[in-house]
Length: 229
Image 1 (cartoon, rainbow, N blue to C red):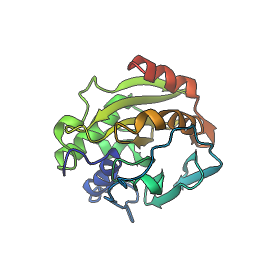
Image 2 (image 1 turned 90 degrees about the horizontal axis):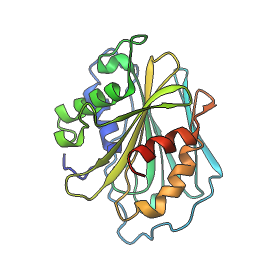
Image 3 (image 1 turned 30 degrees about the vertical axis):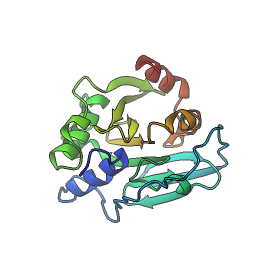
């Protein structure tokens, strides 16, 4: 798969790689959309209001996020995405946020042990790289993902850019209360779109909830600041 495919494709690819593993609960209906972004779309230059909410309950693990007017929701298997259809569906370098829920043991970590979020993220992406879904250099080194505490949850953040520079992204991972499951949250605009989208993205992340509990945006902002903004 080419280096400019997005982190949302990583989510779908790992679904396929895990499909034969009994430790993954339900992989039915996962979509690998590869629609290219619309080249004539006008980048958003204002912070968009977020009047709508997308929610997914996966076997008791519930996530939700608010999104702008005119965006669409795609839900399939263990994944939930919200995206601007005018600037490309998930799978390109458009505007969107994708989420995927999985068991920590699906990446070889038993819940209850010291399941640190950067290790979970590294194993998740390394599995995608090993299966040819992403270039090996797109997976972070063991110290490439920053650990932080997000509303009392173990979490990690990883900045990503494709080898050819056509797409960049921020990937977040957060463990649930008992560390039994993790949630991957990925976004990947084209680099020229990120300055216009960043403020809206931050507002969207400020509405993210895990099991009906909002996770403080201040915790995420502090982690991003540690990466230099």
